[in-house]
Image (cartoon, rainbow, N blue to C red; front, side):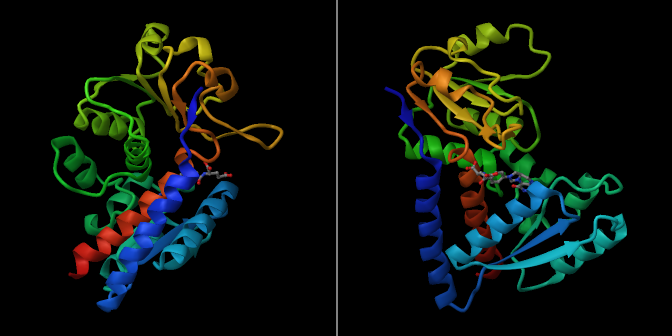
Length: 282
Ligand SMILES: Nc1nc(=O)c2c([nH]1)NC[C@@H]1CN(c3ccc(C(=O)N[C@@H](CCC(=O)O)C(=O)O)cc3)C=[N+]21
């Protein structure tokens, strides 16, 4: 029987821990504060941004919303970020992605003060991860590690396959697994021997954005599957990158979609906000 790794329950537990820590900080007169910057009205973004504000409210973290029009220019957005960098009361800055075409997203992200980079997207924080120094970890990779740890899944010496090589999930999660002493392979669209790699993996982390791409027969018997995919189907339902029904009887543990990695991303964002507040103000 496969164990369902319940991201909703684990994220609720983390948010409860953050709430207690936020309370302790507040007792010292420090109110942690996250600024969320949204540009335009990408439909998924509005939902995610609302979820982030809700999580802040539940954890006792103040959240501020800055909504710029779809047509806004690069300079407008940079001005907003410089303003938030300078504000004493703002601990974390999150610029919701994707950004409209006219905006250079890298330049915008890199304008954020590294001490307020609660997404962990800046070269400074990703570089720290690479060389094993403390910094803000990107929320989805950090959430994946937390799911594995709190589910008591051993990583040391295990074969871990990461599908996908993005800067915000694939590459950093591979580094985190390596830090935990797993043997890590990163596969992508040009990988020649994917079937062989999938059959060998003790832990498979799928982050490629293709609905139901991984089938049960692709997996090693008893593998642990972490599904980062959030693919919206025509009927409105959400599917992961792994065919959940098909994989279920073959794996030892698996994250559902929804209710797996997604909620953990937000929980780890809360954790990063609190950490930023503590580091900046005490
Ligand atoms: N600067 C920035 N930081 C981000 O962290 C960031 C971003 N931009 N842009 C978009 C992606 C996506 N993302 C998700 C967070 C939570 C869920 C989540 O909670 N998902 C629920 C379901 C939500 C639904 O129903 O759509 C679940 O999987 O159970 C999903 C996706 C953060 N992102």
